[in-house]
Length: 193
Image (cartoon, rainbow, N blue to C red; front, side, top):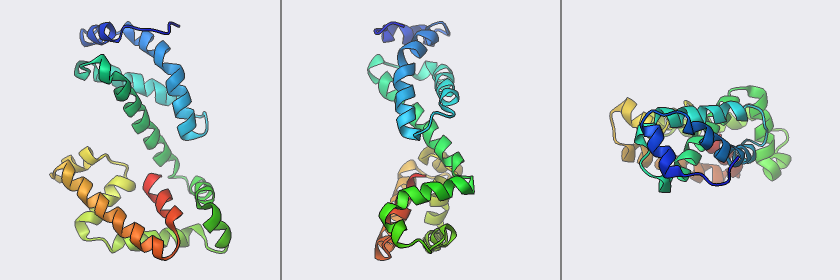
């Protein structure tokens, strides 16, 4: 494995449909992406599959890569997005949700041992139900279905700025109301997982 690669040359070759440089990219970036992924997921399971998908996406988007200067940011953004998707899909399992909730609640959880996970989720869901209809729809598409701002905008025929506005308003509403009942870490759990 070489420490240095000529990104400009690799990007140019990829744009010309030469897939050979993908191996150089893989060898160069794999250790950094692996460590980044492991620190993000906290477990090693599925990392290799995710990283393979990163390089598939690079190949699929090879004509859109314009400069070596932005490539690092590009590859880490793809990796981060795939890791977030993996975390969200893991949380479809109720047992994993419960374990992560216990970890994320830390201090508050120890004070509220009698409160079940479903009761906490119901409080959050009730707050989401209080949102104006459009905000609620956008928030659910973002947090429960895992769609990106761009995907939501395309699906609903609105701008990404409108999506961002509605999500920010939703978060403000949840934060304000969860602060009142001392459940800020539930907000963290709900928003980022």
